[in-house]
Length: 153
Ligand code: RB5
Image 1 (cartoon, helix red, strand yellow):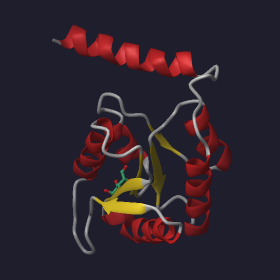
Image 2 (cartoon, helix red, strand yellow):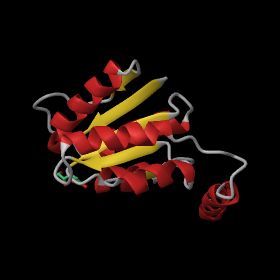
Image 3 (spheres, rainbow, N blue to C red):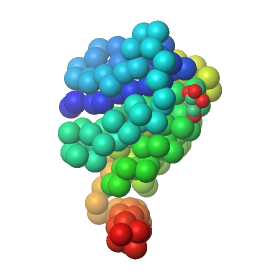
Image 4 (tube, helix red, strand yellow):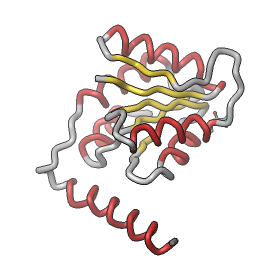
């Protein structure tokens, strides 16, 4: 599976650790920046990654910044995208099984690297089921999103 990854300057180290971790497990990783020493606006990176997910180029992606929050807020502005900040195992599981999140967001200033790797593993291991009781709720998110887009036109 191909996975997209992106960060801002506050989480460059975490991005590189997670990228290596994914590659060591056989994933192909496309890196959307930031580069080493580069200063970026986190919304620009989040948007590029989320847009690629919405376009169907990636089924899963990882976004990291200082807290994970800014990346998550921005990614969720892209229609069709469900991004979740996960700093504990239960949220990592449920963001897949309940919310069918395609993007996991984490904060380098919030959690340690070993926990981040473990959360990413958990998140990737959990598959959403369209037969589950969560499916109508996820479909409802999509419906409301479409209603909002129509009303704004
Ligand atoms: C630094 O720009 C910091 O605000 C950012 O990395 C992130 O934590 C925002 O949510």
